[in-house]
Length: 67
Image (cartoon, rainbow, N blue to C red; front, top):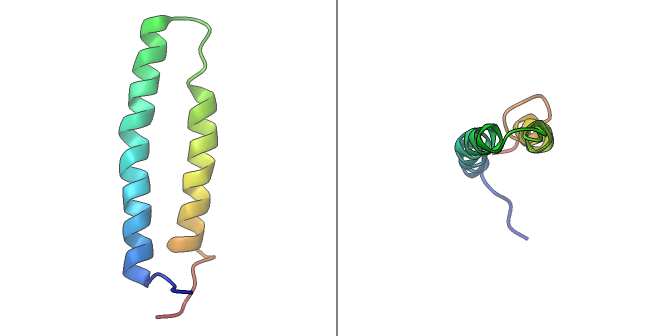
């Protein structure tokens, strides 16, 4: 079993964040164009929580200190 290096983990988080931002912007714009009911906050909340957990274990307090 191979483990990712610190730089690989950091790069994975950067890609996750880079995809998150334009995707959420797209969903907000789409939902505003379509009108009520407004639902964009649900993917924002779910995916945002996933991004927060990803950060926690890659760059935050839960990050592995090996390497």
